[in-house]
Image 1 (cartoon, rainbow, N blue to C red):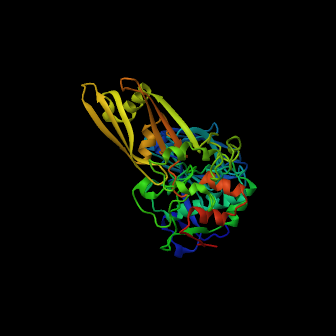
Image 2: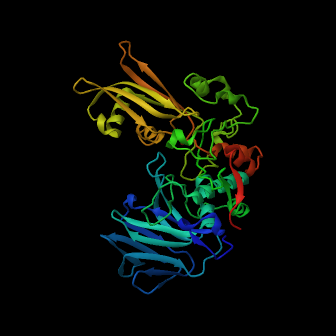
Image 3: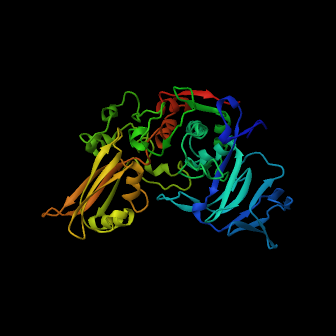
Length: 463
């Protein structure tokens, strides 16, 4: 897909470069603790380069088994002998055009690290494959042109069956987020960004579609610019639930160019819920308006029974607009003991309440009160929407935009705790399901981008 051989490394890229950068994406991370990887090259000639050795020709469809042994790697091609190296690179001698399924097959890659949808999937990767020995496992890095990477992002973040304008909007936003390079992630790792929700999803070429390839070509080099003229750090999340959030409420910092929006048409009555507060929260979550809402991310626009065909392949179908999680008190107490080190002596949970919310209703401070095994009262606090979602679910809570509803015994003890919530994700920037809803309504990608980033400007930073 790349139209020029001129390039720069991602970490050295600036707007003045005026060219497409090369990116390095961590596919298998040291934290995955995978001491063995299995790969298969496609029906094309590849070479296996190792530090200190001559390049070795790999036959089409050759299989490789790479193992970490201490601080080095061993590699076996087919049933041949093992050889040792510190760094290995699998390179295609004559790279084919980008297409579905093109590239090296890597088995059992972790997807959704730490989230409720975590699983292992096979991924097919174009570009160069680099392997290193980390302290805990093999590290696999995919090096490729940015535009080829983006084609894999937009079909992992959302499915390739999505409308063209959703894929185009997702492409512009994902390109902007990567080129901004403002978040200090993986700074000391041998790659620019990882392949998962920590950064943005990238699952190679296996799910590419003609529409996704067209969307990447049609928006080549297009980004969102902040009012200051820099490329916008364009965050996005799966579902805002009706109102998007501020970066301050989620990360404690301002991001010029990102402001909260109501995810509905300009004339929609839903705008009365901006901001979401303790006073209007119950109506926002459960009012009669929910049945007829025009919110773009609601089931009225994107039906729950249809959403599965539009999501990425690691996602599951659910009603993300409104959801409920209920715990018996003892179940939540077990969860708190597991997730909060200071709660190991928790004897009885006495209270849980939200102490601070953002404009979308997302909690960024939750208070807990419990009696410990010595009979003393303990007060604790969960700070940040991420920590709240991490603690209040066995895997990961959909979002922190919830109301806490306590059921108490006649004597006052808590019987059960219900979290009634809205949305999926941190809620900052583009609402992906909302953008899907807009595209299904026939709205073009530029209008979608302006809806979610009203203070930003569309621009092209390389041809």
